[in-house]
Image (cartoon, rainbow, N blue to C red; front, side, top):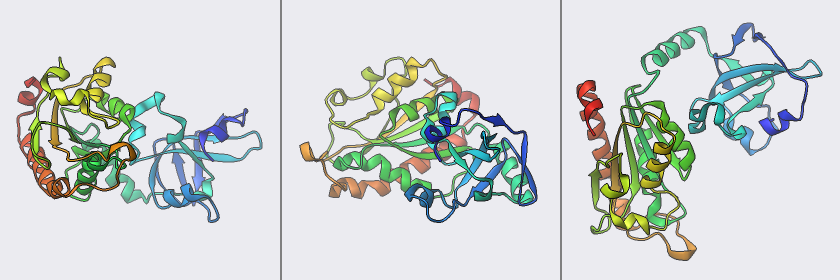
Length: 285
């Protein structure tokens, strides 16, 4: 049941706690999802996912429902403004509380990385040829091993989700995108935009690039929200083609070959940032 369906149930009562499999769970506890068989494709996608309980509610028939937000959902960063599609309701029999030891370990990790210092964000449209570069790099980075102070996420074309995520006060944000820079296709480069005037510090080609979301637009949105936007680095790759009017699946040969190089560049940047004095990083423009 998604939130739109849940809103049809007018009488709702918040419950302080619920007993599931002999374990008392409350808001903020983490559970693993096991939707009942016979559901739709979304249930299949959610099977085995870890989520955080946002509320426990009882409908007018006295049935309890557990409202959760997926731990890996970028939309959770939108706070109270997040879209309804980022919250899901489950029958108590469809969730499994994490074992107590896991709760302790997870809580320790959450305390250590309550506010990650670094956000690594891949952006782009996989249906527009080389514009999928940032997505591919982010997906490969997500398979690596980073400390809890680093968050890696594939935002795709979800510009608003990324703009809201940038309000979380990251010390450094690394954006990964296929971005024209006047170089041969496949050329990987690093640019640090002037956050006071992103357009002036990024290539003029960005004004006419055809893909759905570019770094300049994201920075403009984030700046307009008056959030604590700090240091931003752009790891860009010169695109060869966006596929024209019909679009294109897959990266061109030179851009595909540049994916591994971009992964190494991002890993090196993360290592350097983590070794920096935080006070120095904060003062950099």
